[in-house]
Length: 121
Image (cartoon, rainbow, N blue to C red; front, side):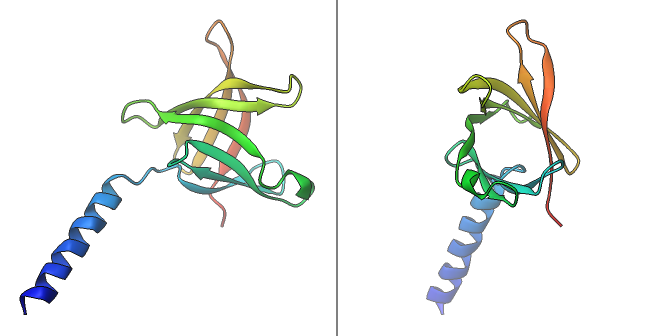
């Protein structure tokens, strides 16, 4: 009788711990301008192209690396691949409702939105 109770308590404790660490941007996001899905894996601090209908060769490629949350805010920072310069550039990732906005950060600190994502339906 004690064993099932302990198992239930352990399961509840593990579930609570996992639920408390859930990141709201974790998982799949739909590109708003292209038929593409972006997968955010916050355990690895990365976002990659999960699916791209127009460019299947891009699937699996790293899009954003070194993603870290800014405190407990709805903002993250990272480095996004820029094909024009074949390098990673600093980006700011903001969650507003069900929309994720990714903006390139200039050396002066200004930002320009480069990617807009929503949760897939």
